[in-house]
Structure formats: C-alpha cells, structure tokens
Image: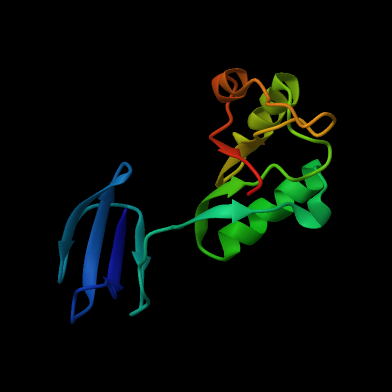
Length: 144
C-alpha cells in the first residue's frame, strides 16, 4: 500500500509512504511502484493511531451494542487501541465473562482490551488476578 503526497511530522514537504504488511517500508518524496493499493493523501496528515488507556462503556452498561458503539466512535476519532475500564455492569470479575467478552472484542476492527477490577464488588476482597490475566485481562484497575 502506498500513501501518496501526505504530510508527516518532521518533514517540511509532502511525502509518499509505502507500507508492506504492518510496517512502513519506505518514505520518500515520490515512490514509483506497481502496488495496486494507492491512496491519494492530497496533502492530508498521516498520523499513527491513537491509544486510549481509559475508556468507558455508554451508561456504564455492558452490551454488544455498547461495545460496537465504542468501536465505531474510536475508529472515527483515530483511536486504534483502547483499554476499557471495568466499572460497568455486570461486573467483570469472573473468567467466563472475560472469555466471552474477549471473543467479541477480537471480531472488531479496533483493538479493544479489558481491564479487570482489583476487588470483588460484593465483599471487596481481591479477585483472583492471575486467573483474570490468564484469561485475557490486559490490566488491573483499582480505586485509589
């Protein structure tokens, strides 16, 4: 894939950017190639994806619709990776729910990951953190 005539940070003039796989292969004022996928940047900025480490579901409620809305909003805003905080209902404190959610998140066009709560809601004891991490939690969130 080649992005033609885009503005890049650190460059005074428009550049062409060639991407092979998931890596930038070449940046030059002009790239000639037989690549079939060419995007005319028309002087627009080409920036890396944004990573947001503190996102929440709409109304703090877990549903397939709210996950899809979050993915769509993130994509429109340039966010390619986001970490969902665990303060939603139902509470993410068991491995079954975590596995189910990770299966749904894997099918999206944005990288969404889950943080697990440090403690249980009912008696405020520590969750089995090793089990939650083993089953796909990317971070642990605790109230401070």
